[in-house]
Amino acid sequence: MLSSLYIGFSVLFSVLVIFNLVGNTLVILVVLRNRSMKTPTNYLLVNLASADIVVAFFIGIQFIVTPTFTHPQGTLGAVLCKIVTGGTPGWVGAVASVFSLVAISIERYWAVLHPHSQKIKLTKTKIVVLALLSWIASLTWAIPGFLATTYIKEFKGCAHSFSKPTYAKLYTVGWSVVAGVIPISIMTALYSKVVYRLWFVNNATTESTQRALLRYRKRVTKMVIFVTVVYVLCWVPELLIYFLGFTGTITLQPFHHAIASALIVFNSSINPTVYSLQSSKFRKHLGELICCTKRNVVTPFKNSGFTVDGKSDTMEMERDVPSTAE
Image (tube, rainbow, N blue to C red):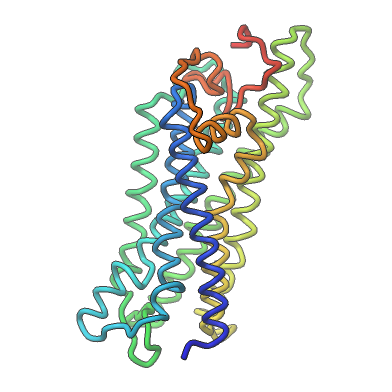
């Protein structure tokens, strides 16, 4: 019989996974079904949403489906652990999600500090390359974990089994660096410069369109920084738990893994809510999508919220920004 703890976590993950799949699928559809949303940076958000869906599906399986059946042992059990029940694909998506956030921070930096540069402008080709690199890097990083994941009879479940304790510690430290220290450092450095430019540099201008664009960029920056802060709040405890566990400071228990995984799935589920709260344009298209009232109206690219040269900035173009702002 399943314990109340397992049942509780199964219910929690079921809610998170449903919320995640619905929310992130809507994000993808909103961007792909509306020409005005098909812009370079919004494609980065589509990549982020795709990664978040992978996170929810494969990590959620560990707590929704796996506890309800007897896991095969032997070779079949080991294979299932590597490709499904061990959650390895989910952690690939998690790292791809982190790398997507880094890519978005780089885009914000370019758009705000170098809006007129032709050399570093984001084109659709560059976005595709960034997206592919995020997945290639994630898959590469997942190889050690994939090889080490197997069925442990004593645990009656999947776990990492390294041939030497040193390898386990190196892998854990590597996770802390790849998914924590490096991304947080990059995003902190870039967003610090963006915030300084937008809020602390004298941006006095007499043109109403430029003032509107400045307000617009501030709103965009607030949104992506909020998404980044949520990532930090969810990932740091997860990385800390495993770091303390593999260094022997604490003894890892099943509920440690459940809590850490819940934080990651929550992080992958919250972004659509942030977009809805921050972007009136996203809310508009989302309402049209849900209510099936979408019209085939082609919106001029200048009102799309993003342009290839980075002069205009995100899912939302505020209603008070004149068309000449760009």
